[in-house]
Image 1 (cartoon, rainbow, N blue to C red):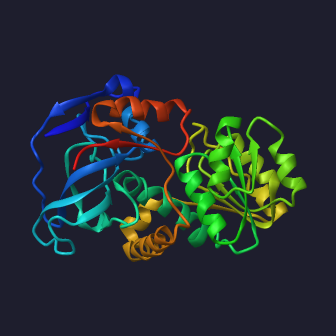
Image 2 (image 1 turned 60 degrees about the horizontal axis):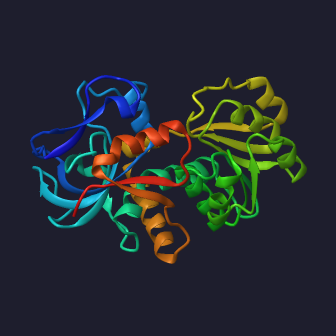
Length: 322
């Protein structure tokens, strides 16, 4: 089968290459999936650079999120049937087949096509746990979403709007504003403008969803309200900001970390509950991944590089096959 491989660390376009490798055999508790589509995620960039928290031994296959159909079951795997359409997350899925842990596999939402389903699991689970599990977002609260035109940002905007929050999105350019607006942001501000003053002038933020870090986090501490909650999702800016305990004390706000993969390992029951709730929202039309482009398998390295370069909106998806 064809699989994208990384044999040395560097920029994705320089270190990713297609190779012929054997179709994997599903081990105990694993599911072999014939891959239809793979969503491009920022961890793919970090994997290529050797900066991700998990470092598979070189050479390895990138890709962490897929939609496909069950091709075979390993010993002890019994939750799914051969031919069933599924979504899953695991490192090493940018290939025509992938063997993934059964615990990471879920039914694919019937209302989403392969490209949208491939982009559904991680972003919406991250936004769901960040807003509902960690921040306990309530209807009527003011939600501030950084990188609101990105994959996880559009998911957070959609889920915030569905929960009845007033959503403000921060984007990097005017061209990205319509994407955030279409995802449920009633107000969109540019990162380069005085967004801190604008948010404070509009009543502040009760909940901040921050996948950017750096100056976005520092600014959020100035705009967050009394008893507000800042959810730290990631550091797409490349800068890990300091958390000032004295400032949090004086303003009486909370800083909440979110590492969604820990829930998959430690509380898979909560992940399954969230997937069921998100699937219902997708069926109702309240949420749907914003797929900016579905690219051919041969162009996967360029797609990951586009995400690394920071100019994308929504999600990029690699079409693999049916």
